[in-house]
Length: 609
Image (cartoon, rainbow, N blue to C red; front, top):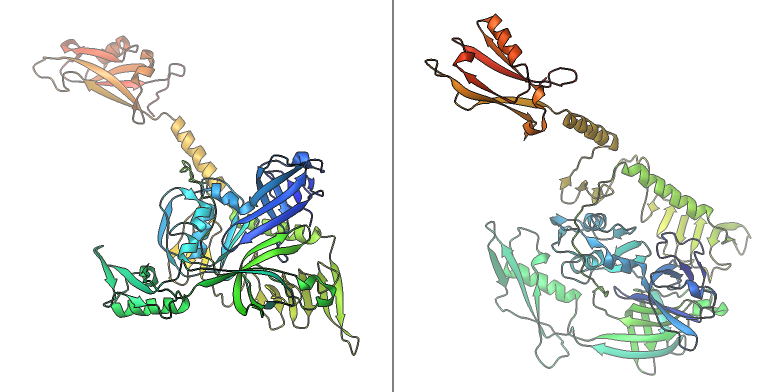
């Protein structure tokens, strides 16, 4: 495949973007199990589209024999040497190292829900989506600012640390698989297809003993460390001469609140040792081999190998026979063949540059009207996939004896042996495979009424029985964990209701809602005609004193007593123009009550409601 160049902000990679890098001299993609995923290409300065190559721009290339074309972001371009530059690019998923995750925690959460929350609660917007094969609920938390990729793996408490598995990176999709590869049955053998082999061993993870322990927490929060009476468990048949002890915490192997005894701890530790032999060195083999499935005479063999697959290596001259997992591949994109594959055991850590992100100041806005958007996006995606295809090959298989057709194939190559992506339809069902004619078929509708799919989008689902681990909203804010019974619901207001409420609030706030209070400098009750005080009008708008902002002519003072004629004369004298008045014995004849009104000087109407 010829690499294709795209702009730095491109999100869809079905077109030819800025153009194909047709003069590329070499292009190799290296991918490690839960590790590096990078591209290195060499390009002449006289080549077509050389001027378009720049840091941050994207390159689409074929990463191996079976995967979809992947996109890599350029991060380094060397100075031309002999008229050729070397371009280094990291897989698109490395962008997750620069996406800040918001802080949150949950004492018990399923990995599906935890991953959805991680990807939706970010300070930095992004286009990535996620999936996981795991379902066991565990405690998960983000207690300090860090990137989304760091939360996936590479630090204590990450998804890889808690649940394990093998990551598959497919452009914008991040998939945590319980087992990414398969046992292919492929044999790479000296004299057949093996062209080069180097053998290496690392005893870093080899031990002679293990010290297991677990921490028991009671209702009061007090912690007790539980160990074995014999302290150490020997690892049988260890190849080491010197003593070397593995100290391991088994607290997470016990359910929350469960009693931890020495016998229970011993059983957990024994089970762990049975599943993880640590007495001998795990061999690492790096081999180069000829992919026979690309040879016309071997087209029917279909021995494709992908990252994380399990294969058998045989070298009769060296006496080596080993079954191991593919942990690293180096793929020549231009010639579409492996340069080398590395077999052996690998530590489950995510290798990447994890940059510390700044803590977010603003949370992401809540999404509304989600499900119509989800359905529309799924329909649009399906439409673009189906209508955007102009290639492919249709083959009808017929019976050799009767000549009757029995199977329909739609493939990405003209013959079965070289095809990788295949639709296969016969009386048994309809299925799609990324791994050639013999599958496995991860998308299928079979004749016994079953549908197999990784992701199903539907408008309305009617069913007699639904079996599920977690039922969740798209953004993870509402969910029901059917395994633990835990339910979390969050209500949302529609956009229209929020706007209507906000407008009503604004309308109320614009209404000043004035409140006038009269204060007296010398009390409110006077005896023996000893009357002298100052009455002051204080006006509040809601709880704010706004007296100083008002015109004195807005304040109208009135008196009410038993003498109506005297009251009228007093009111005419004090009709307005002051916020305070002096009251003496001359203003009161036996008994009087004083009032103050606040008016609009234009309409002369009261503002006190």
